[in-house]
Length: 152
Image (tube, rainbow, N blue to C red; front, side):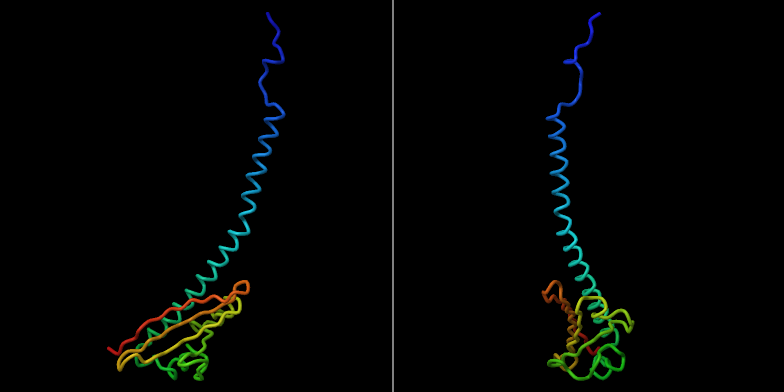
């Protein structure tokens, strides 16, 4: 019987091990370098979702009140706007989108604000535009939603 020589043994050489380690480290570096970008994108998307949800709630609350109650005095009485004094032409600030203490732009979004603009488009038609603003890393972002309310 012949004795087995060392050359016939199977195993990995140092170069193969080093190459495998290099590939693992390179892959890990690529994956880890994309983490901050994906986190930033997730946060931006979360802010956009929050702002859109808040604007939709506010718009639906106003639309649900009907044409007759889509006036400044009625919306102020319902707590859907903060003041009857406009901050711009026919534009009024709001903090609560559903009269909940924690559901307001400044509590949910960084430096968040909300406005409601009410325009009489024609004799029996009002346009309502809700805008939610926030600041994300020094950039002001906004969501604007609008609807028409008819006197049926």
